[in-house]
Image (tube, rainbow, N blue to C red; front, top):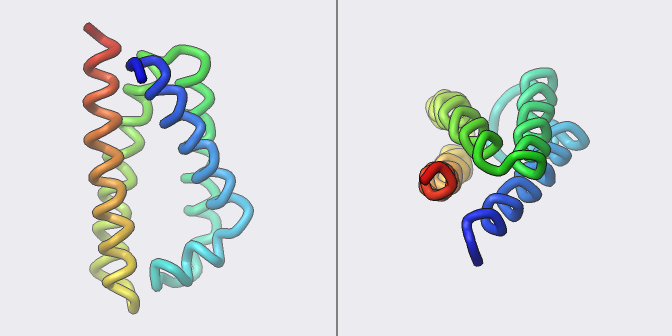
Length: 113
């Protein structure tokens, strides 16, 4: 798979994550063990969808928007881990985002060459 194909797959995955955050914020809240943050989750979902759409339209610029979004996700999930009543699950989500952030950063760098 080349860098553009990888970017498109990451963009589509982001759109799926964003749709989940918009459609089922309560499910995400329960999974992470956090309180009522429907508005924040839906806002993050919109950001994720916009970033995914940007990747599909312009892979290089869109991937850098994903990298920026990953930084925000990492900060928010770090706070969630600290306050969660399901820390193992929140930490698992943080670990997954760290892996995705690495993939996004590497792919954005590859596309920029």
